[in-house]
Length: 214
Length: 214
DNA sequence: CGCTTCGGATACGTCAATGTATCGGATACG
DNA sequence: CGTATCCGATACATTGACGTATCCGAAGCG
Image (cartoon, rainbow over all chains, first blue to last red; front, side, top):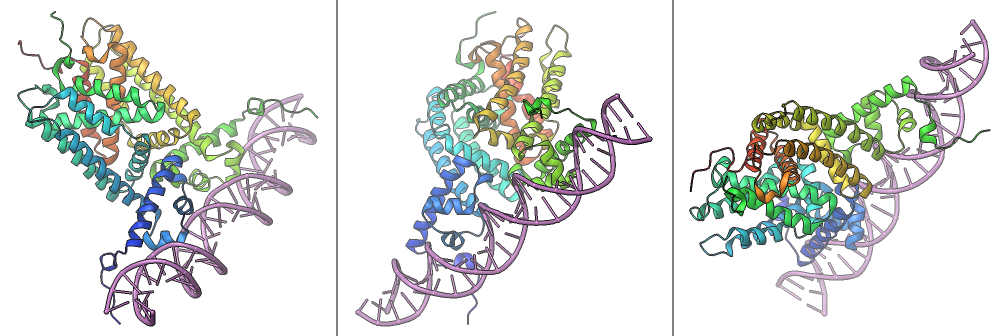
């Protein structure tokens, strides 16, 4: 009898399998968003997906594993959308327009922010998970930094931030900060406006509003 | 037999009671910080505090209630410390010095940030809890706004932020943003430096670096 | 110092969630 | 169309967390 080496890679992926896996992930997203990771049982996810627990254990070993997969999937999606939004300008960077588009993508779905924050709390206590999250953030930051540095010369960045990379970090920080507030007051429109304000304040010296002569 | 009206207020607070309550809260803080609210059982808290579950149920009805009390306590403490840090300047506001002191207080204890973020996730799904958190944030923001507006004239605030209140919101957002990063990389020193940078960039037009004449 | 009240410990019943072992229908494939 | 394999359903045993009812020592109070 041949022993199956590296079981994770060896398992053939049937159509049925990917379908149920996807449905489980989708259901998990909804349930996590509604109740929070910490308050969700495996059974609840299965029920929401219309499966029994057997299906779950056939696809994942633990709830953590599912959560990780879920995050990875959605995070990649968002990262791609942000990259798109940044690429839409020509070689010249139109700061307000870019800010608008990115803001639109990043603050589109409150449920995602809920799940993402839950994941943050989770990651904060598990180095391996933290690394995954840091990677995702790194990808976002890089995309922003690239865009900024490619457009240097048109727009002067404030010196304190220390170059395009620093500015990109600032953008991410602003995003995180606004997210926090949004989770509490659930006012997406306010959050968007507010994020735009912050970003323009950070990225343009003098904040885009002509400074009065002293 | 007299029926006890409004049981919560009628219960006399014995010395013993406050002691055990305090020990429970202290233990809860440690356990929550270490494992996260979602993964902690009532029994674990009691064990850490050196009590049995009887003590717990004599003081709290649910883990949520304890968590709420814990947050309230610590948040008040932090708010007071921030107010102190802001009051140490004379009538004139020394931005860099103030930023330093506040940064010191706000990013002192990673465990607190862990617990606070956990509480945020919790609050995001319970309006009543969310209100409490918004109140706390409101207090912080007000303290900052007061300080900023009292020092108007010395330092010009960037116009985009829209006055002292807007600037205060920006400060809080920056704090939240840096917190997120800190939870992942656990680098307190970097976070402090980074928060200082952000704050000076936001609060001083031109970012503390003298703007070149056009 | 003695009585009363309080507060935490103990013991018990209950329940929900977990992981596993097994089964039978569905699916892929020749 | 037949067959081998896969995958999700079902049933079961186990565990651990919960809440309560009761008890006893300690603290307050005269």
